[in-house]
Image (cartoon, rainbow, N blue to C red):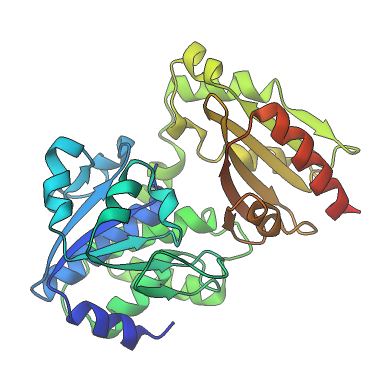
Length: 326
C-alpha cells in the first residue's frame, strides 16, 4: 500500500462517510477518529457512523469526534446522497451488519483501509490494505505522519488506542519494532498509556463478570487439552443481563493454559447463526480455517459468521483444527 495513493484518493473527494465493522473495537474507532481529524484539517467534511452501538467508548473520545450510531430514520437519506464511503479496519462489506444493505445500494465511491488478510477484497472501488501492519491505526498513522502539519492533541490518543487494542497492549506477535516506535511518538504527542490501559482493560461491568463466570464453567478442553472451546448462547446473555460487547478478550483467556494451542469462541447471534472467533498460539493457521467459512483475519487470530448452529460448528471446527494440529 502506497501512502501517496491513499492521499491522492482523499484529495479527490470532499465529503466522506467513515465506518467500520459492526460492534466496533478500539482499532476501528481510533482509526476513524484520527482519520476524521485529518480530513477536517484538509477542509473536508466527514461523519462517523457505527452499528449497533458505541458502548462505553463515547466517554473516551472528545465531543468534537462525534461518533454517531446508525439509525435508518435519521441516516438513510444522508447516506443515499453520500459521495464517498471509507470502510476502516475491514475489507469485507458484509461485516458492516445493519449498514451493509445501505452500503451495497449506495452509488458513492467506496474504499477500504485495512490490515486484515484477505486475498481479494470485493465491493470496493479502491483498496488500501497492508496485512503486514499490526493495526489499521498503523496505516492511518503513516498517512497522517507524512501529510499532517497540525496538532496531535486528539489524533495521538485515538491512534494509540487502536494500536494497543490490536496488539493486546503489545503482548501479541504483531507488536513489531515499527509499532513500538509509533507508540513512542504518539506518547510524545500526548497519548497516555495508563489511561488507555485502564480504559481498555479495567472497565468491566458486573454483568460481564457474571457472563464470563457462566460460560467459562462450560469450557471444554479437547485433544489432550490442546484445544479449548467456549460456547456463548443467547440464554447466557439473558441470564446475566449482558451483551455482545461483554465478550471482548474472552477468547484470549484459555490461552493462559500452557497446553492450549487453539482457543475457540462460538457465539450464538440468533437462531441458526453463529460467530466464530479463533486464536492460535503458533502451530495452527486459524485464518485459513475461517476462510472456509468466508471469514478471515490473521494467521493467529481470525473470525467468521456462519449460518450454522453451535452444535454443528463444534463438530466441523474440532475436526479441522485437529487435522492441522497433527
